[in-house]
Amino acid sequence: MQGMCRVERDSMGEVCVPADAYWGAQTQRAVENFPISGVRFPRAFIRAMGLVKKAAAVANGELGAIPPHIADAIVKGAERVIAGELDRHFVVDVYQAGAGTSSHMNANEVIANAATELLGGRRGAYIVHPNDHVNYGQSTNDVFPTVMRLSALAESVALEDALAALADALDRNAAEFESVVKAGRTHLKDAAPLTLGQEFSGYAAAIRKSRGRIAEARGELAELGIGGSAVGTGLNTKPGFRERVVVLLRDFTGLPLRPAPNLFEAMQSQSPIVSLSSALRSLALELTRIANDLRLLSSGPNTGLAEIVLPPVQPGSSIMPGKVNPSMAEMLNMVCFAVVGNDTTIALAEQAGQLELNVMMPVMCYKLLDSITIQTSAIRAFTERCVVGIAADEARCRSYFERTVAVVTALSPYIGYDKAAEIAKESVKTGRSVRELAEASGMVAPDILAKVFSRENLIP
Image 1 (spheres, rainbow, N blue to C red):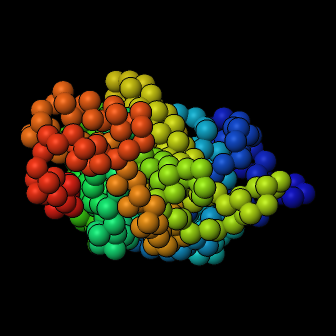
Image 2: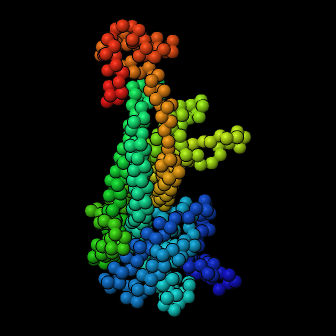
Image 3: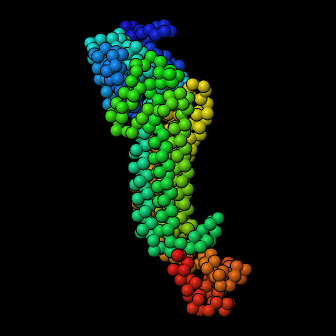
C-alpha cells in the first residue's frame, strides 16, 4: 500500500489503484486512458452485467469448472452488483477501447474483490481471480452483446407501458372529441371536414403501431450468444455451459431468452440492436409529427388555429407577460431529435463491425439505452402533463368547419369538378360561404343542397 493507493499488477506491469476501490489494474488503466465524456454506463447495464456473471458462476460451479466455494463467493459478489451496492465502482467512460473490454474487466475486478472479501481476503489480493474465476469460460466478445440485449430488453418494458398509456389517453381524447366537427387540412390548406375525434384516433393508432414495432424488435434481442467465448467456437467453455447460462438468465429475469442458433452470427452482427434502435427512431418520427400537430392546432390564442387548448404548465416568456407555450410538446420534439441522432450512431457502429466481432458495441449500447430511457420519461411526462388535459375549442372548430372551401368537394358529383372549382374560387375571393354561393347559383335544388351539406354526408 502506498498512501491512498494499493499497487496491483497486470500483464503490462504495476498499477496504482485507489485503496478503497473494488476495481483493479485493468480498470484503472481504462480510467486513465479514457477521460473522455465523464459518462458512465447506466444502472440497467450494470445490473445486466451482474446477472450474466452470476449465471456464469452458477453454471461453472455446477459443471466443476471452478471450486464450489469460489463459485458461491462470485454469486454473492454478483448479487451485490445486481442490487446496485457497488455502482460507484463502475468507473469506465462509455467511450473506451473497442468491444467493451474495459467495462467487462471493470465488472470482473469488482466482483472478484467483493468475492475475495467474502472469503476473508483483502481487495487487490485476489483469492477469487477476475480472469481465472469470475471470467471463466467467457469473453468480452460474448458477454458484452449478452449484456446489451438483457439491459435493452429490461428497459424497453417500461417504454412499451408508457406507449400503451399514451395510446389510451389519445383514445380518450378521440372519444371526447368525436362530436367536434372541424375543417380538415392537407398541404396546410382547406381539405374535406372531419371530427377532431377522428383526427385524434389516427394519433392513437400510430402510437399503437409504433409499440408493435418495438415489441417485434424486442423478440430478436432474446437470442443470446453467451457461450461463444472469443470468436463463437466456445473455446475454454465446459460442455453444457452455454445452455445452462441461458436457462439461468431466463429464470433470473423472467424474459423469454434462448440460445442464438449461430454463435458466429451473434458475435459478428449486432443487427438486433439496430432493429430496436430503428423502431425507436420510427417512434421518434411519429411522436415528432404528433407533437408538431398539437403545437399547430393549439397555436394562438388569437392569431393561430386555436382549435385545441393544451394544459398550461409554465410561463412561456421572460419578456411577454401571460404568454404560455406548448412546452411539453417542445420537450418531446427535442428528445425525439436526440433519439434520431442516437440511431444514426448505432447504424454507423453496426456497419463498422469486421470479421468475427463488432468492436463498436460500447457506443451502440450506450446510445440504445439512452434512447429507451429518454423516450420513456418523455412519453410519460407528455401523456400526464399534456395529452390527458387537452381541451377542444368546439366553437372555433365549428367556425372553420362552416367556412372551409373544401366542402365544395361534396358538390362535385352534382355539378362537376370545374363548376365546383369556380364556386371555390368565388368563395375565396368574396368571403361568401360555399353553401351560400351554391344556393345563389341555382344549379342544385334546395333539398339536395341540404343533404349535400349535412354533417352525415360531409363526415361519413
